Length: 179
Image 1: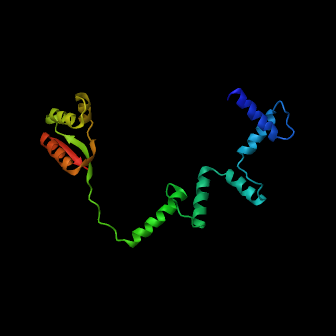
Image 2: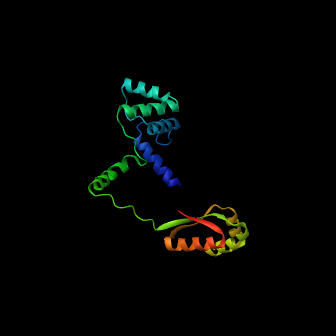
Image 3: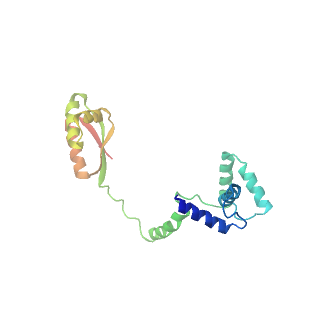
Protein backbone atom coordinates (compact mmCIF):
# COMPACT_ATOMS: atom_id res chain seq x y z
CA UNK A 1 0.00 0.00 0.00
CA UNK A 2 1.38 3.40 -0.83
CA UNK A 3 1.83 6.12 1.79
CA UNK A 4 -1.18 8.24 0.74
CA UNK A 5 -3.42 5.14 0.85
CA UNK A 6 -2.23 4.23 4.34
CA UNK A 7 -2.76 7.78 5.50
CA UNK A 8 -6.27 7.84 4.04
CA UNK A 9 -7.14 4.49 5.62
CA UNK A 10 -5.91 5.62 9.02
CA UNK A 11 -7.70 8.92 8.88
CA UNK A 12 -10.96 7.17 7.93
CA UNK A 13 -10.53 4.73 10.78
CA UNK A 14 -9.91 7.60 13.21
CA UNK A 15 -13.06 9.41 12.15
CA UNK A 16 -15.14 6.28 12.59
CA UNK A 17 -13.78 5.47 16.07
CA UNK A 18 -14.92 7.82 18.80
CA UNK A 19 -12.28 8.78 21.33
CA UNK A 20 -9.33 7.62 19.24
CA UNK A 21 -6.17 9.64 19.08
CA UNK A 22 -6.03 11.70 15.90
CA UNK A 23 -2.35 10.85 15.33
CA UNK A 24 -1.91 7.22 16.29
CA UNK A 25 -4.18 4.19 16.28
CA UNK A 26 -3.76 1.88 19.23
CA UNK A 27 -2.89 -1.72 18.46
CA UNK A 28 -5.17 -3.21 21.10
CA UNK A 29 -8.25 -1.44 19.75
CA UNK A 30 -7.44 -2.63 16.21
CA UNK A 31 -7.07 -6.23 17.42
CA UNK A 32 -10.35 -6.14 19.31
CA UNK A 33 -12.09 -4.71 16.25
CA UNK A 34 -10.66 -7.47 14.08
CA UNK A 35 -11.78 -10.12 16.59
CA UNK A 36 -15.30 -8.71 16.58
CA UNK A 37 -15.40 -8.70 12.79
CA UNK A 38 -14.09 -12.26 12.55
CA UNK A 39 -16.53 -13.54 15.15
CA UNK A 40 -19.26 -15.88 13.94
CA UNK A 41 -21.71 -14.83 16.62
CA UNK A 42 -24.27 -12.48 15.15
CA UNK A 43 -26.18 -11.74 18.34
CA UNK A 44 -26.33 -12.96 21.91
CA UNK A 45 -28.19 -16.28 22.10
CA UNK A 46 -30.24 -17.98 24.74
CA UNK A 47 -28.43 -20.00 27.42
CA UNK A 48 -30.09 -23.19 26.14
CA UNK A 49 -28.64 -22.74 22.64
CA UNK A 50 -25.21 -21.72 23.90
CA UNK A 51 -25.19 -24.86 26.10
CA UNK A 52 -25.99 -27.05 23.08
CA UNK A 53 -23.25 -25.34 21.05
CA UNK A 54 -20.77 -25.94 23.87
CA UNK A 55 -21.72 -29.63 24.02
CA UNK A 56 -21.45 -30.06 20.24
CA UNK A 57 -18.06 -28.35 20.12
CA UNK A 58 -16.70 -30.94 22.56
CA UNK A 59 -17.76 -33.94 20.42
CA UNK A 60 -15.28 -36.01 18.46
CA UNK A 61 -15.54 -36.33 14.70
CA UNK A 62 -17.23 -39.75 14.88
CA UNK A 63 -19.70 -38.52 17.47
CA UNK A 64 -20.48 -35.52 15.26
CA UNK A 65 -21.12 -37.78 12.28
CA UNK A 66 -23.49 -39.89 14.42
CA UNK A 67 -25.24 -36.72 15.56
CA UNK A 68 -25.74 -35.57 11.98
CA UNK A 69 -27.14 -38.93 10.86
CA UNK A 70 -29.47 -39.05 13.89
CA UNK A 71 -30.77 -35.55 13.19
CA UNK A 72 -31.30 -36.40 9.52
CA UNK A 73 -33.35 -39.49 10.38
CA UNK A 74 -35.38 -37.82 13.14
CA UNK A 75 -36.13 -34.67 11.14
CA UNK A 76 -36.65 -36.57 7.83
CA UNK A 77 -33.93 -34.63 6.01
CA UNK A 78 -32.94 -36.38 2.75
CA UNK A 79 -29.32 -36.77 1.73
CA UNK A 80 -28.60 -34.10 -0.84
CA UNK A 81 -26.43 -34.77 -3.88
CA UNK A 82 -23.19 -32.87 -4.33
CA UNK A 83 -24.16 -29.30 -5.09
CA UNK A 84 -26.58 -28.98 -2.19
CA UNK A 85 -29.65 -26.81 -2.40
CA UNK A 86 -28.63 -25.13 -5.66
CA UNK A 87 -29.07 -28.38 -7.61
CA UNK A 88 -32.44 -29.32 -6.08
CA UNK A 89 -34.72 -26.75 -7.78
CA UNK A 90 -33.22 -27.44 -11.21
CA UNK A 91 -33.75 -31.19 -10.85
CA UNK A 92 -37.44 -30.97 -9.87
CA UNK A 93 -38.81 -29.69 -13.22
CA UNK A 94 -36.71 -32.19 -15.15
CA UNK A 95 -38.17 -35.05 -13.09
CA UNK A 96 -41.70 -33.82 -13.82
CA UNK A 97 -41.01 -33.73 -17.56
CA UNK A 98 -39.61 -37.25 -17.50
CA UNK A 99 -42.72 -38.54 -15.78
CA UNK A 100 -44.98 -37.11 -18.54
CA UNK A 101 -43.05 -38.54 -21.48
CA UNK A 102 -42.20 -42.21 -22.00
CA UNK A 103 -38.56 -43.12 -21.64
CA UNK A 104 -36.67 -42.99 -24.95
CA UNK A 105 -35.06 -46.14 -26.26
CA UNK A 106 -31.48 -46.70 -25.18
CA UNK A 107 -29.30 -44.54 -27.39
CA UNK A 108 -26.78 -46.47 -29.42
CA UNK A 109 -23.22 -45.71 -28.49
CA UNK A 110 -21.34 -43.99 -31.31
CA UNK A 111 -17.94 -43.22 -29.75
CA UNK A 112 -15.72 -45.90 -28.30
CA UNK A 113 -12.49 -46.28 -26.35
CA UNK A 114 -9.91 -48.68 -27.76
CA UNK A 115 -7.72 -50.58 -25.34
CA UNK A 116 -4.71 -52.70 -26.22
CA UNK A 117 -5.09 -55.70 -23.93
CA UNK A 118 -2.52 -58.19 -25.20
CA UNK A 119 -0.19 -58.97 -28.10
CA UNK A 120 1.64 -61.94 -29.59
CA UNK A 121 5.30 -61.90 -28.57
CA UNK A 122 6.36 -63.08 -32.02
CA UNK A 123 4.57 -60.12 -33.65
CA UNK A 124 5.75 -57.52 -31.15
CA UNK A 125 7.76 -55.51 -33.72
CA UNK A 126 4.79 -55.28 -36.11
CA UNK A 127 2.47 -54.22 -33.29
CA UNK A 128 4.93 -51.54 -32.15
CA UNK A 129 5.18 -50.20 -35.71
CA UNK A 130 1.39 -50.04 -36.10
CA UNK A 131 0.97 -48.33 -32.71
CA UNK A 132 3.62 -45.82 -33.79
CA UNK A 133 1.64 -45.05 -36.96
CA UNK A 134 -1.77 -44.93 -35.23
CA UNK A 135 -0.83 -42.78 -32.25
CA UNK A 136 1.98 -40.70 -33.76
CA UNK A 137 4.46 -41.72 -31.09
CA UNK A 138 8.20 -42.15 -31.41
CA UNK A 139 9.58 -45.65 -31.77
CA UNK A 140 10.79 -45.72 -28.15
CA UNK A 141 7.44 -44.45 -26.82
CA UNK A 142 5.56 -46.96 -28.98
CA UNK A 143 7.69 -49.79 -27.58
CA UNK A 144 7.02 -48.65 -24.00
CA UNK A 145 3.31 -48.30 -24.80
CA UNK A 146 3.01 -51.83 -26.19
CA UNK A 147 5.03 -53.36 -23.36
CA UNK A 148 2.81 -51.70 -20.76
CA UNK A 149 -0.36 -53.39 -22.09
CA UNK A 150 -3.21 -53.39 -21.12
CA UNK A 151 -3.42 -49.70 -21.93
CA UNK A 152 -5.92 -47.32 -23.53
CA UNK A 153 -4.95 -46.56 -27.12
CA UNK A 154 -7.56 -44.05 -28.27
CA UNK A 155 -10.67 -42.44 -26.84
CA UNK A 156 -13.81 -41.13 -28.58
CA UNK A 157 -13.27 -43.12 -31.74
CA UNK A 158 -16.21 -43.56 -34.18
CA UNK A 159 -17.47 -47.11 -34.60
CA UNK A 160 -16.27 -47.51 -38.23
CA UNK A 161 -12.73 -46.42 -37.45
CA UNK A 162 -12.64 -48.49 -34.25
CA UNK A 163 -13.62 -51.65 -36.11
CA UNK A 164 -10.91 -51.02 -38.74
CA UNK A 165 -8.25 -50.53 -36.06
CA UNK A 166 -9.35 -53.69 -34.23
CA UNK A 167 -9.22 -55.73 -37.47
CA UNK A 168 -5.76 -54.37 -38.34
CA UNK A 169 -4.36 -55.06 -34.88
CA UNK A 170 -5.91 -58.54 -34.83
CA UNK A 171 -4.19 -59.38 -38.15
CA UNK A 172 -0.89 -58.29 -36.60
CA UNK A 173 -1.37 -60.46 -33.51
CA UNK A 174 -2.63 -57.96 -30.96
CA UNK A 175 -5.85 -58.02 -28.98
CA UNK A 176 -7.73 -54.71 -28.84
CA UNK A 177 -11.04 -54.25 -27.03
CA UNK A 178 -13.71 -51.67 -27.76
CA UNK A 179 -15.45 -50.15 -24.73
